[in-house]
Amino acid sequence: MDMQLPLDQVNRRAWTTRDALHEFTRGKKWTDAGEQAAFAWIARECHGQPLLDIGIGAGRTIPLMMEISSNYTGIDYTASLLDQARKSFPGLDLRHMDARDMAALPSDHYALTAFSWNGIDCVDYEDRERILEEMYRVTRPGGLVLFSTHNRGGPGFDERPRQLLPRFSINPLRFGWRVLRAARLLPFALYNYRRHLPLHRDYDGYSIRTAAAHMFGIVIVYTTLPEQRRQLNALGFDVDAVFGSCDGQLIAPEARTSDAWWLHFVARKPR
Ligand SMILES: C[S@@+](CC[C@H](N)C(=O)[O-])C[C@H]1O[C@@H](n2cnc3c(N)ncnc32)[C@H](O)[C@@H]1O
Image (cartoon, rainbow, N blue to C red; front, side, top):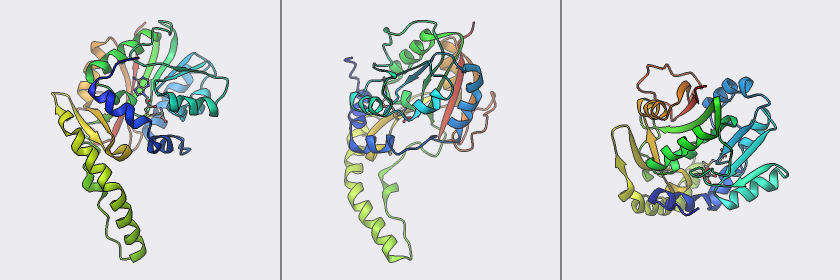
């Protein structure tokens, strides 16, 4: 497990912060309406079948997946988050593993291979391809992969620390609290943002930017609808459905843009 490319180094550090643990153990059920719609889409087809859950973090998705099938395997490469998941869900098959190398898992096996909450955006683009290739390998012919990814056309692209500046309120207590909060967060956010600037890049169908999460502590891939479709098709997948994060609506196959924060892709490995 020694795959320390630039984004990896930055993001792995972020997963071990208190902020990440707090965020991943907040008791949130769905990240957004699109995730709920995507799960509803795949649930019946995958009922009772083997499921693989990649990047489980502290285990938010475990109950969501177990509702579909108890034939469940979860993996994550962050030991501290995995420990938390093991404590909350003892007895399950939860493994310390990097999605770029899932050699320990069987080929052509899972009815569903999922990587939720934009986890796939946290590695460099070459590694994203590697992960999708691995997801393809372990999924059974006719099976599904499900993942979400940040939308370069959405409102979350190119977030800046100035968004932490306090909004004015006529209520002095509320405004004072906002000022204090900004004074606490802004120095960390600015420090991280400036440190990550050299990693920012723009390419034809995707960009690399710092995201506001974890005090501007992660640097991630933002992709576009056509580029994500292209990449999936090039790897041999058929795209079954795409859901937008804001309203959970299906995004038409011919759509070239969307104003969703992120996109949930359901793709199929052909038989
Ligand atoms: C945004 S968190 C989401 C956690 C969890 N899926 C949830 O929805 O609450 C992303 C997770 O992906 C994991 N992750 C990122 N890259 C990974 C990789 N290459 N292999 C395994 N896990 C990875 C991180 O450790 C982190 O736990």
